[in-house]
Length: 159
Image 1 (spheres, rainbow, N blue to C red):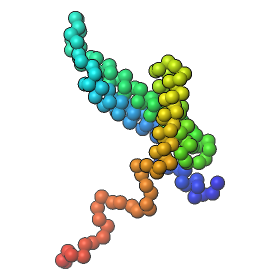
Image 2: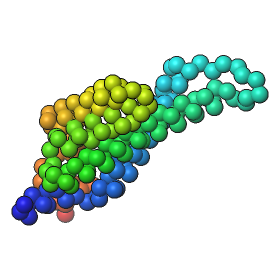
Image 3: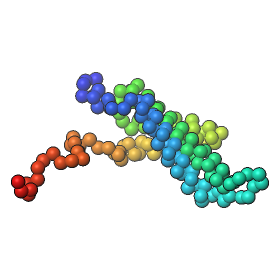
């Protein structure tokens, strides 16, 4: 492996940092999704000896979805980084392996079924591979640097 390939694989963030960011992003997205699901599905019922039953049940649903999404995000990014570091390649296979392991481990555990684990793993792997192969990334390296200020003087400004 030559220096340009190594530089392509190296990034500013370590694998652990990326995994933590994936888990934190999953937690935030899952919490928001849990709030939406609780609003749509969970009509609060009146319960005895429970203050604010709707709020408590909504918070439980937010936490459940948040932790599930955090686990999926953390496992996905962690396995993707491990696969990338092991294979010394950065391609769609890393994401597909990460997606399969995350879907099979987390959603299979929640579904308590081998068929659910295989289905969820295959769905996440296919989705990740399709996005990676299609080039649908959030960052494209164009070689340009963008500054929050201009670096050149405008020609129309009079001195």
